[in-house]
Length: 241
Image 1 (tube, helix red, strand yellow):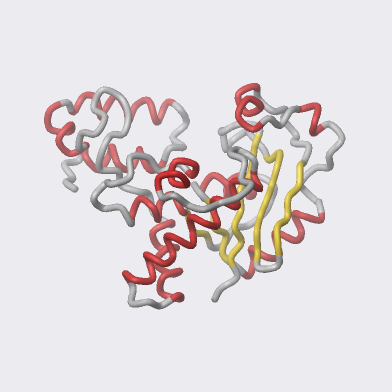
Image 2 (tube, rainbow, N blue to C red; image 1 turned 90 degrees about the vertical axis):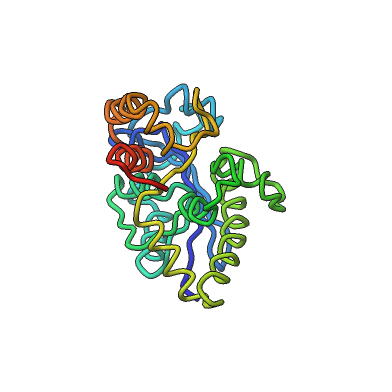
């Protein structure tokens, strides 16, 4: 099977245009690799409140760019497949450091694709951990290494399900997962707000203005939420699910 690199990053914030890496962790067939790095911009208070990584903790750390870990990871990514939850974001953070991520699998998008009946209310990594009752030990949430442990367990569950769908072929399962990961997800239900648990297609018929308002907000926020932008534009153009 292809070399898989299970990766998670912690960052100074969620803006791919200005935020940078503060922690990187990845798992390969030969073990775990984790490092803290001093970013060129400070940790935001919001990021610190989520990750418990402070600017003081990072003050004496090396930069990620030019580090031994960066060189090791770059060599692995050149040959293998990065697996991450919301992989587009992690890839963007790595690319901001001058790295290339040629192939990737996004477990968020694959989990969404493998749930056509909308049985799962949310698709965050930690929600899926407990909803799917994944057995993961010593995995602290919002710590890159802890999240990689959950990511690995989630991938194995999704991979087995995907193999069944493609005829029990590992190669075809990986190809299908990469194909799904390369395009935006299409949501079918609202899992928040005044239309929680309502089908988006139905809301598009009864309150089109709400979808347009949401779409405008997504673009005002920088247009980074590719999945929701794709979903809202799809239904506003008359798409059905």
